[in-house]
Image (cartoon, rainbow, N blue to C red; front, side):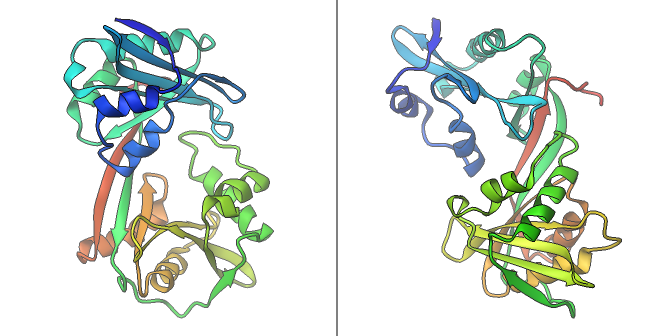
Length: 288
């Protein structure tokens, strides 16, 4: 077996041996695989056995999360337990500056992957869930909901502040301009933006994107983290945006207010956990 740089056509050859991705997260992570790049910096490698690609891996810089590089390695199902993933990861680590920290994610409960990550020096830093909330799960409070243009600077500012405040576990430096580009620009698919206010100040927001099905929308929900209790504002946004359609919402350990509201729907059996993942990093202790 040898490990080489990514070549044209590797994506199709690897798809044949990998099979279809097991989830939306898996599909997204596979998108990291590809050729090495200089700006932004990234490395893409393929393991080949008897002329046949059997594994691939990549590391990529994330400008808004500069502390760690994203890492993804996948081995063909019939080629696992041969140490190939370990060899690919070690080669990737050799191609980046000394002292670089990595992060990756796994399906929560995948004991084999968790064991491998631990052996490579990764420790858990976050747990995330994708929740599907049925239409009509919430009743709105007596709070007015305003629809805004997705180009709103005020909305971009609050979205950036919320993102940075809820990513202290993976420090972010998202600017207003980056929030506009990554969360609200037409290229993101953002279709609608809703906000609530208190004394003219924006308290909470919800940005709707096309979902996997016609009656489901992906919803990015946030709030003013300095507000004493924005839970009723968050619940009202979920009620209004999800009155006639189901919502797909992602939560993690840091989205505390949103988690409490979503838990009410889960306990009422009007929401289900579609996917659960664990995020890992090499610059934390397993016992941290």
